[in-house]
Amino acid sequence: MAMLTVREAAARLGIGYSTLKGWIYKGSVRTTRTAGGHHRIRDTEVERLLARQGKPPRARRLSSPGGVLVSVSGRNRLLGVVEEVRRDGLLAQVRLRVGNQLLTAVITRDAADELRLRRGDEAAAIIKSTDVMVGRETGSGDPAAPAVRAPETSRAGSTAAEAPSRRSVS
Image 1 (cartoon, rainbow, N blue to C red):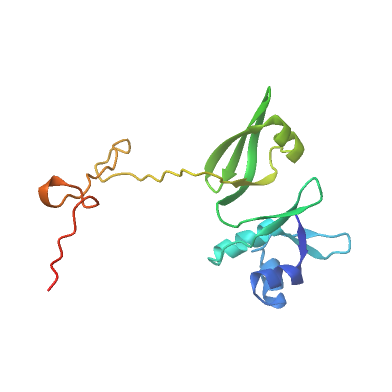
Image 2 (image 1 turned 60 degrees about the vertical axis):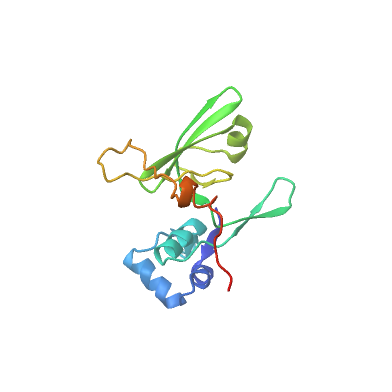
């Protein structure tokens, strides 16, 4: 995780240097102090502040093992803290705390070793999927009851998508 100066963090947040210093002195921003007493701010802390302002996180540049830079989109990325890493054979199970939720991912053991994932580390879950399901509780009080609605029908029992167009032309 990259460490930013107060000036760099303020620029990324779109606020003034003195505003950010005020937040630091109030304890609203987590910082690390250098040996010389200067504040440094993790990029993940800047992303937390951006989220609090309702702004999307910026794309981050990561260095790959070959030295080529790749860009990771700010969408479909969940920042969190590693709660647990279980390695078994060729796979590793990683539990990541994102807010008050736990996310479990199964990755290769090699990937877990290469990332050097350990409990307490900050990490990002990057969602790459062609299928995403979204659910919610129904009003019935039974969270297991599916919220299914029959397709709307038009004339002759065909679904709205199949119904022929019957516009008259004058």
